[in-house]
Image (cartoon, rainbow, N blue to C red; front, top):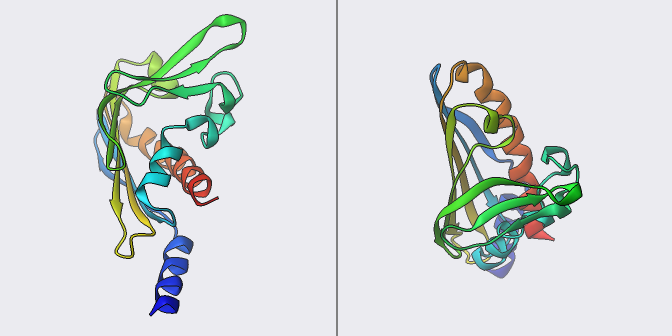
Length: 171
């Protein structure tokens, strides 16, 4: 029975994220990533709330993900320090339930310069064996125009970030 559990866990860890644009119009979209992470919810959670350990430097304003921080409480900032003393608020926590759910509000990257709002939700569900976590990441953006064209690019970048989170949690 133990060997069977290890095989199931290994297959789950190797499975790619199910990624897709789940809704799209000219003024809004929703992208969803769903994958199994070979780490229990508390370990995935501790990695999630430490974005400097997994966020890609290429998707930062400073060019270095070590400048990221997150205050994991309602109202807490997912922020980045900039050289010369500046900073960026990427998102703000609006719902925090450790090891289960994190919801953030904010417009990431180039969306900051657009009249849009975004809500990112990370849902962590224990896997059937208790050693893995089913992670669902959903980013809903509304406002502006041309969102149908932008959604696939956002899905790709979110997929990269989610894969990086998975790899960091599994280390």
